[in-house]
Structure formats: structure tokens, C-alpha cells
Image (tube, rainbow, N blue to C red):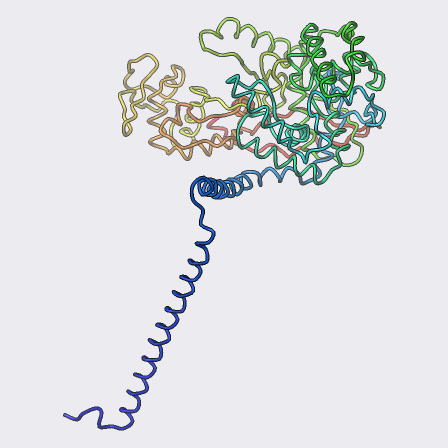
Length: 554
């Protein structure tokens, strides 16, 4: 056998490979030793700065705080980014419509929005009104950057001491951000969004503009938005003419307009106004001698007509519907709505009656109602027991489990998948995994028709139907009929476990009444500008109704 090294070419090639390998090994060794030396030199250098004892503890705590702070800042920005979407698409003008609402018969029922003809420039508002607002809501408004850090820290301390929310730490800019872009929910996410949007307002607007927007758009009780509307409503005069006592009363409304509205509770409103006067003295805006007259002669309010039957919840919802049209040009509008004041009165009375009779039984403090025509026209809407106490519209914004009222969606889906009203399904014990639904009666009826099952609201039958036809098909049917919320596919879905809105359920049930066509609830039939020109007519501008169910299913 030949020795491979007998070939000179192979011998030279093998030697070259050995040289390269040696060079690589040597280079790596020297590089590693060089890096090690540098690291050691750096360590020796850094030992000069080594801390011990208390300084080291402070340094480590500060380092950890910085790390956590940076992580928290990244998380806060991630949570706040969606809020900035609201600052696009002309947010400045979205709320400055002046809308007069008529009922279905053409009678005026109320107004919403900013009334341009009544807007008063900031420089024409009384100096004592501006001082009263700043002394009570944000004394450092003109010096902070959108977030009043000392005020926030102070409020947190007071709330911790009281073990309750007794002071608000939001700056005026933060309150405006909430009014313009956010809801009233009390969550950490909303507070983070509020803070970032306040910074955005401070960056894009002057302090004077922020203050003017706040005074124009804050809710002031009695269905009024802005100090000018509130002044006309409570005192019968322009905000330009209010005296110190009246200015203090207006400034006291920002904190809790429902609680301190003078037409509801005048003693509470005057007590709050007295606190505002004290705030002005403590802030150094006025002396005690300058406010003594306002203390001795508190503001009087004009007598209000009974507004208990005013459809305020409906008008709030209708106003949002008008803004979604994004009409161009004239923003002083007259809207012919669908509401019927006769129906509205009965609906209000029904809600109040059921709460008086059943509130304790069901541990409920509120109720909601929506009355619609088969085509979706809303004739009455009750969003809560008292609009003055809470403007949150439970008819359009709250989510509740529909319970057995969801079952018709299951039966409708069954009708579209081969079942008939005479189809027989067995009412007997059933378990799916560890979940075993039961009937309200506690017993079982055996083999029953779908008609009987629906009439008696038997629980087992819709669950068996859902198992047979698929819950995804039930969700699809419910969506076609008008439910807009996310319906989670769970075992208890056919029994109404998914949360829905009252207004959506009313519209979905209208599908059964109108022959199977989708009936999205709507608030108005016509929108006109200040010259009487029709900008929107539902008969011509609304899309034709979509079929949601076929004739046989209906």
C-alpha cells in the first residue's frame, strides 16, 4: 500500500492545512487573552467606583427603580397608543354641532352639542369665573405641563388616608382629554390614556385654548354642556353677566354635576359654591373680604320646568348617531327624531315601577329599556333610573347576559338547518364535560316538540340543538339579526351566557316581527341645516334592509 506522503503535492497541501490550523488557533488564543486582559483592566478600573454600605444600597435601589421605570414606561406607551387614534379625523369639530331635536311629530324636545351662537370668547368671560374654576379644578394650570404632579401625589395621599376616593388628582388638561376622547370608566388603562392625551393636548394647543374647550364642553347638569348653556339654564342670563356667587356655583358643578345641580339640590349647590369661594381665598386669587358678600348672598336659580320626561338618554345616543354622518358645511342642525314622548313617558314609568317593586329582589339599582318599531325606529329609550344622577346609557353601552331571551336565535338557526316546529327532541339529563345544565323546574319532560320547548323555555332542548347544529352557526345567525358584541362560543352560549346590549336585542327581535329583515335601531329620519335644507333623509339615503332570516324560518 502506497504512503500518501510520497506524493510531494499531497505533502505540500497537508503542510499548508496544518499551517492554517495553527494560525487560526494562535489567533483565537491571542484574541481571547487580549479580551481577558481588557476585561480585567476594566474591572480594576471600576473597583475605584465600588460603593459600600448605605451608598451601595441607594445605588442598587435606584438602578432597580430605573429598570422598572423604563419597563413601566414602555408598557404605558403600549397601552396609550390606541388612544391617539381618537386625535385623528377632525376631532376638533366632532363635538361642535349645534343640534335641535324634534320628536316624531315635529315638536322640539331638546338640544345637544355646542351652540356656536352662544359660545363666549374666553376674554369676555368674567375674571372671577376663571379664577373660581382654576382655584377649584387646577390651581397650577398655567405652570404645569399637562399633569399636575404635586396635585396627583397629594390626592393619592388623601385617598390612601381615607381609604376611599375623596380627592381627584387629574389636571384640567386630563379632565378635558377624558371629556373629548375617553369614557368615565375607572381603570388604570383609562388613566394612562388620559395622561398621554393630556400631554398631547398641551403640545398641540395653547393653555387658553385648552381652558376654553374645557369651559365649553364640560357637562354642567340638567342636560347642559358648557358654562354658557349652564348660565342660561340656571340663571337666565349669559355667562358674561354672572356675579361672584353665581360663578362659584357654576365652578362647583364640574366635580359632580348630578350631585350639585342647583335645580335638583340647591342647598348642596350653595354649600359647594361656598367651598369654591374658600378655594379662591386659599389660592390667593381673592381675599376673604372680597368673597364675604358672595357668602352672605348666595346665588339664586330660576325655576325650571319639569324635565323628568325629557328623553335625555335618547338624545345623547341620537347626537352620537348624527356625528357619525360627518355632514359637511353648516353645523347648526335640526333633527327629526323617531322618539315618541307618549311611549317615552310610559317607558320611564315602567322602569321606575319595576325598580321600586323588584330592585331588592334582584339586587339591582338600575334598569334599561328600548322600544323599537319593526323597522328599527326607536320610539323610547331609558338608559337608567335618573339621568341627573348618571348619564351612562345602559341601553346602548352596558353589557348584560340575555339569558333565555337568547334562545330564539338557537331555534331560528335550527329552522334553517332542517328542523321544524314539530321536530321532536328529548328533554332528559345531559352533561357536556363537567357541565350539566338543568331546567328551571328541576324536572324533565321527555320527548317534546320544539314549539313546546320554546313555549316552556326548556333549557335542555336548545343545548341539544346547539350540539347538533354547531354553536358557530348560532353566532352567525345572531350577528345577521343585529347583535354587535363579541359572542364567545362556550357550552352555555345557547342559554344566553354571552353578553349583549339592550338596544341590539331590541333590534334583533324586530327581525321576527318584520318578516326577516335586519332592523338596526335608528334615531332619526331627517337632518336639516339652519336654512331648512335637508342634508339627510332616511327614505332616500339609508341602504335597503338586508334579509337576515328566510320566510320559512320567520
